[in-house]
Length: 239
Image (cartoon, rainbow, N blue to C red; front, top):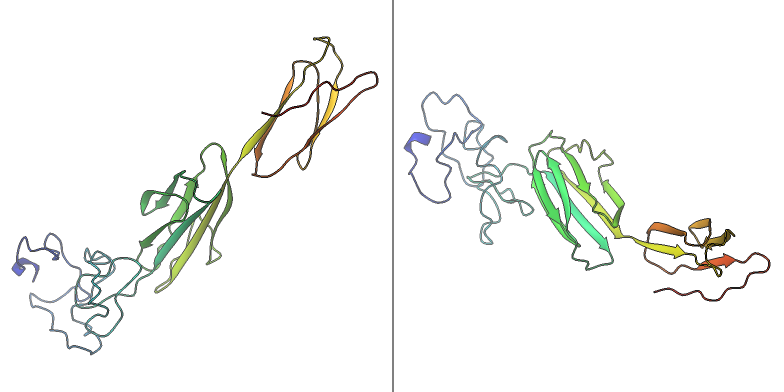
């Protein structure tokens, strides 16, 4: 019984009800498990709301539970003789350009807030039947190019079934801007000039005006100007 457990001993749940499957033990200890045998229905199996679920310490020498079920290797294993089927969500993030140090803020509800950089990964274990919501905040200068889970569900409600791990992959790309500024001689002339940025669009500028093409993916772009009659181009440079 919990009241009989040693106090202050590492690796034990001693501050809460362990939530064993048989909730009506009538003041008696559960029957002892038999190694290699299926768990006794009234035995030491946990329930998913147990404080011992998915909070154990992974040991390379302990690969299976008392009944021969593999211990979880994605999240933390259970504390106790028997391992419950584990399920949850694995979240990854990839950045372009690769190796960029930018961190992205994620929110998983329930689950909490966390950050992932390029190549980052987090795994969250849940009881079956939970449908968490997942979102990523995109910082200025970036755009999201992928955000999907492999169970084809919505990010607002990711269905987690028993024994299933859902993979949710995010990808983000750093974006840039091209600023085109027009100057004429004589200054202040009202003539308008037509410009084109390939794969972006067209616009017009007069003296002192500028146009910003924002949110551009990394790559090569060309800027072309169409000269009106009686005008010549004196210079066209980029910094």
